[in-house]
View (cartoon, rainbow, N blue to C red):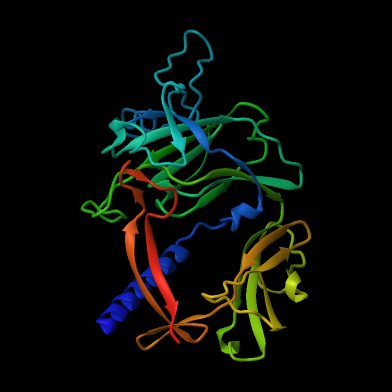
Length: 360
């Protein structure tokens, strides 16, 4: 029984690794890491909506995508310029969906709905300085999203479980009455996830947080910090990592771990800055002591604070090793739903719950 369990666990781990690699290889260029550590303004809450099963707001009668300045496109304002202008769409507080959340659980008419829903949010904003940029970041939209701000298309994204963001062109953001529209389409396709015949509920909607993010013109876009597994048994353990800046100016990058009194500069190789640090008395992350260290990544104009646990994970034969010590896993994957309400919880499509103990 145990060997079979390990085989199943390892097969699942291998499949999960393949999926994650696929996601990483198709990840959006310019995606901002660690949104929680940034200067953000939440756009969650009430969004007005229009149900558009025939995609009238997206295509004209020849089934061609409407031009950007087409006043009848649903991404443009629904306020007529004058009394004689024809307007066949309108956003109203009579039709409200909550964000983040699926649409299926918010109104009976959406229970089995597959197709297009237009979401609209009006908001005020603080304009960036000349040395700042503003992005709009979506945690996830299921499944295809086209994003428009004040009548201008920012971009589109396909994939219901991955985050994405778009930079707002300078001059487009206004202090008052910004008009943000997202075309959300959850229709299934035979070459997509979920496919036409699937074993989980096909949710639709803006299912994770929406934020405005203000960053310096050159900012810390992404970074990675990890324990070198080859140093696991050494007195001085090694921490390796890299940092990527986004912007026209390449500046010095510094990594700090205050508790360990560590501070070092990363060295550039092409557009990525790399670092390697030797550390004494490093406490490894374990099941009994899930130790986290504050890690500060800084550049000339940006600073991101994170918490990181240092440990290694490996597979040896039928064993899963945490810091080279075998651990026993027993668990189950369940769909992340509230069955009494048929509602999708905010977060991943599927949650893996494990009971884990370290083997002595």
